[in-house]
Length: 128
Image (cartoon, rainbow, N blue to C red):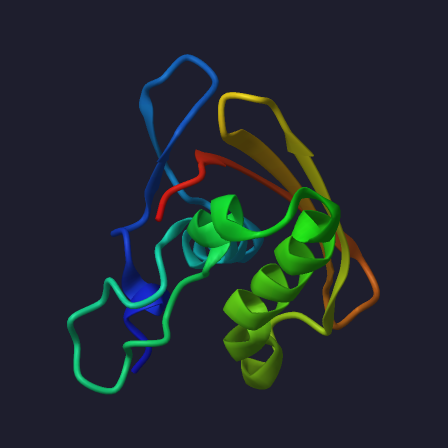
């Protein structure tokens, strides 16, 4: 089983910074999708799951003019296992916002099987 499915153990932070138990399947799915985007690809040391996660952290190596396309590609690659599981239909949109200090924000909209859209947001810094 994909290690992202059960990581972390069912809690997230609420608006005040306190732990909040996931209540609905949609909350669990949203956190799992964010985990897939945030986790660095290749960091999982579980044999057979070396490709779990995303390559978003490598955006610092990509030319500025190509970053938006690369971010979309990396997000689609990271979320592809959820498409294969039937949890989402597709990655609909990816919007990259960045600043000069190497920090980025990524807004991703995914389509659920019923046609509903689910919005995700991930922030980070470019690494190597």
